[in-house]
Amino acid sequence: MTSSPITAPTRPHGWRYGTVLFAGTVLLIVGILEFLRGLSALFDNTLYVNTPRYIFAFDVTAWGWIHLVWGIVLVVIGGLILAERPIGRILGLVPVSISMVLNFASLPVYPLWSIVLLTLDALVIWALCTAGFADDVTY
Image (cartoon, rainbow, N blue to C red):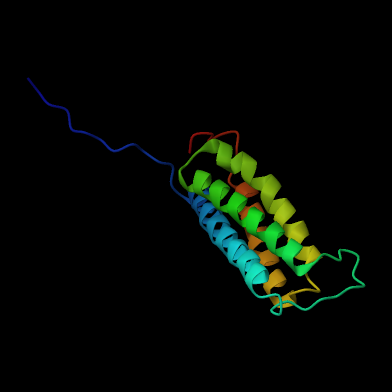
């Protein structure tokens, strides 16, 4: 009676898997940053500068709730990507795109933070789009 060695599941390696891992990690970090941004707006209204004549004129508390909810959504989807669920890669593009719009809209409110998150969102979109969907669905 011969025993067969237990083999670990194989994962694709190389840049395709690396970009997905990168996207999941950055998306998780961006979600946490968005959540913290929302908390800071809710707890300290003096942290943000008000710009009443801006086209996206929201109350600071409204901005706080928007970023808080989006932070939670981004963390969940980042977790799906890191858990290697293909649905996470597919669902990841929509909220990250919306996150870019929200960060662009909040540029006058907090410009440096918005630029950092816009850059991270763009990197996540790049990573999710360059990883390829057709030939490695289960990655």
